[in-house]
Image (cartoon, rainbow, N blue to C red; front, side, top):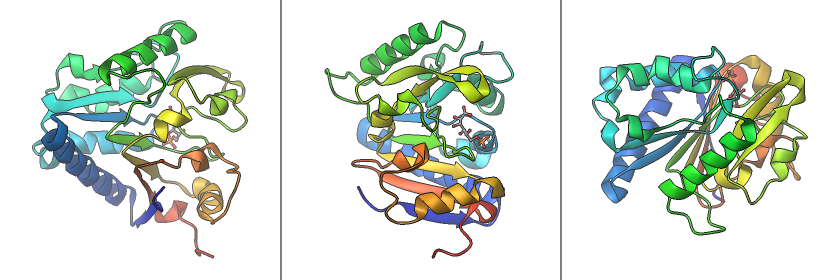
Length: 247
Ligand code: 6PG
């Protein structure tokens, strides 16, 4: 695995602009090389501003949306119009402002029974990526966030979902949130060609520091287990989330 890039941004807007520029570059490269760009979107609140920026003329005019396929890295087990839905967040911030074919938007069915929804999404990935048994999908870009306790996607500390090394998608119950979630598994996240963390907020600084310290082995935090086997990992963070001294 190549060493991760760690980029400290002067503000949340600077972080979104850097992420948007990388999105455009990777989309143009993937579409030139393979005629399509497959990206797994992060949920939560941080990426909302990025998705809005991607819909702005400065960026959207550089993206051939009919060649973009949007997937989700995780989803809350709620209907698509629920306030907690990651799909709804993307619909409001991006989908409602761009011209992208509905067949290119591959949401997780949060409204369904979690295990059924996970199995269906797994089949969707196998079909889209034309996977043979035992092969993982290779997204051109995976966007991720991180919680203050080091979770990423919906892989939380101590979760059995972290042990899943065969399935592509699992349903998981998050005790502390009293909530069911759907999430891509570690092997899928670690097969990404480019994996980009978007991290803001001083509350995340202690875990970021812990993760970026060399030699945290075995990794204590789920976000530290994101170590793409043959892809580029980039940590984009604002100054308040960055380790103060890289010692
Ligand atoms: C989710 C996300 C989750 C998120 C982190 C950080 O569904 O909530 O996928 O992994 O990225 O919780 O969330 P914020 O960006 O809101 O801090």
